[in-house]
Structures are given as C-alpha cells and as structure tokens.
Image (cartoon, rainbow, N blue to C red):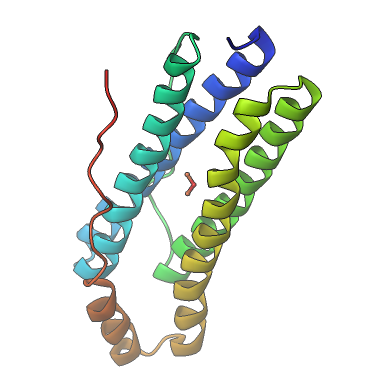
Length: 171
Ligand code: FEO
C-alpha cells in the first residue's frame, strides 16, 4: 500500500512524464514544419518513450493499491530558433527529469518504501541513457554548426531511430 506522500509524488511524476511526451511531440511538429523528417522521427520516438515511462508510473500506482489522479498537462513551447536550440532544451529537460527522479528516490527512502525505491531504480538507469542520447545529438549539432550538408547528414541518421517496445501495461 502506498502512503499519501509517496502516492502524490508518483502522481506528480506521472504528470511530468506526460508533459515530457507533450513537449517532444511539440518539437516533432516543429521539425516537421521545417521538413527535417529525421529529427522529427527521433523526437516522435522520444515522445512515445515518454508515454511508456508515464504508463510505468500509472501501472505501479495501481499495482500498489494507489489511485492515479491525472492533473492538467501544461502547454509546452512550440517555437525554437534552431535544431541546436531544440536539443539544448531537450538535454536541459532530461537533466531536470533526472533531478525529479532523484528527489522521488529520496522521498521513497524517507518513507521507508522499499518497493518504490526498487521500482525507481529502472528510472535512475534510464535517465543516464536519456541524457546520453540527447547529449549525443547535441554534440553532433555543435560540430556541424551552420553547415547545411552536416545538418542533412544528421537528419538522415536520425531517421533510423526505431519505435520503443509497445505499451503493454494492463488497465
Ligand atoms: Fe521520462 Fe525522458 O525521461
């Protein structure tokens, strides 16, 4: 059984993951609007992955006999100056999410909730990958700077990112 403090914190993270998905979908739409389909593909897969994260929180709250209480999802930004600006924002966002996950671990520990602590370990590891993945694209963008040829080469490469495994949680 979840105590109220842990349940509220998990619900907040459920909302944060939904917002992440919404943010990345907004970035996808921006890339589509400037015909960078590889970047759009990378971002839409990222948006889907965030839904997988949100569903992990949804399922865990239910499994523990808690209650999922959806809150309003904030409107994300929808305009950026450049692909570089998008990936600077993406990395900063993932670093912020890492902080949220670390904070959740602290709450679980303070409440002696070992099951939640174990559940969160997957996210601790995932955040290392999330920062590495966004940071990798950012570094490539910094290398090519204003070079259009370089940008199109990265765009072609990002077309290869595959969809995450299907959402398979139960209702
Ligand atoms: Fe759900 Fe990108 O962290």
